[in-house]
Amino acid sequence: MKTKIMMLSTLVICLVAFLTFSTYAQEIEIRGGGSYITLSDDDAPDGGFGIYAGGKYNIVDALNAIGQYEKYFISDTIDGIDSKIDLNAIVSMASFDLMPENKTNLSLMGGPGFYFGSVSAGEEGMEISFDLKSSLGLKFGAALEHQLEDDINLNVGGFYRILEMGIDIEDFPEGEEADFNGLEFNGGITYSF
Image 1 (cartoon, rainbow, N blue to C red):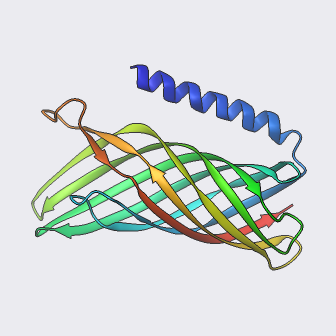
Image 2 (cartoon, one colour):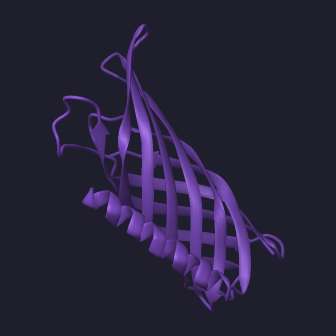
Image 3 (cartoon, rainbow, N blue to C red):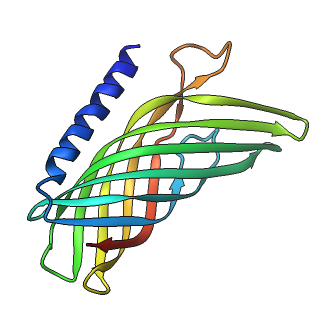
């Protein structure tokens, strides 16, 4: 219960800050692209592909606020058992541009995310499915952005994700969590207006 209250409070604070800062925004960007993630847990699939879409707001000079939805499709066969993880995230990050006046800019980024999803595993005809308990995670890293046109940028990024999620299944030991820590690599396009 305390964790859910903390997650909800954090999301409300982030939303209020995001809306407050966006009223002073100098530039708004729509962003989207694809990604690849890894999972550090040896008992989980190695990784999978995903997509993301969201917005980026320039607050002042080199400081930006980013909000985006991310969806990952993770599947693998481990010890002859097919497993699929459907992982979703609503992420808010702060971004600090190191070279904002250049056509190519390096940004340091980081912030919290609200993660939720489900898992299915088994062989054909004997498959089990269960939900992952919604969890708050963190991700931080860097992104390189190159201006192609006045209002179109190409970007690539690398991040590290800190995330552990509980398993919502009967008889699963309380307090035990699945490790979703790992690397994320993404690439996409931003459009400014």
